[in-house]
Length: 37
Figure (cartoon, rainbow, N blue to C red):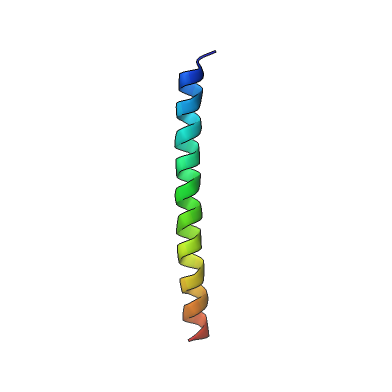
C-alpha cells in the first residue's frame, strides 16, 4: 500500500472539504442577514 499517496489524497480531500465548509459558513450568514434587512 502507498501510504504517502493515500495521505496526500486525504489531505487534498480534507482541504477541499474545509474550503467548502468555510465558504458555506461565510455565505449562509450573509444571505440570512440580507433577507432580514
